[in-house]
Length: 184
Image (cartoon, rainbow, N blue to C red; front, side, top):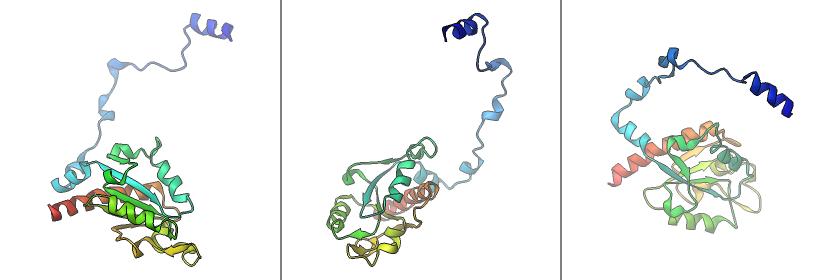
């Protein structure tokens, strides 16, 4: 090992080629912002705000949770959109509910809903939350989320892809701006 390292150092062998910074064409790194410039000012303002999401599992199969966890990895990185998860419903703008409502979690869901400040957006993520899925008629399941609290946005799928969830969160920014304008 040390012999190999010694050869690499003495012969100045590098793994990567060092770019020639003097002849570097910077224009290939410039972003095309034409689509952003075409947006209306109200839309730009709504999309530029931050969004705090409180996730609430009311009895899901954990497939939706795996996709929500994937949103924070380096591939999807939702923090670049100004979207973060929060531990407290008192700090949340959005309440993201996964799974059909079960007997044991109905009260917890209602308390979390009441603790979330207005204006708030409620999202039903996954087939269980949107329509009860295959669990709707079981003994422990009471039904879909909108039977107990008002839902603003549905993201169906079993589970929905992270891209669909990101699109839903961006729509939430728009809905929240409309609610604030209406109440403000």
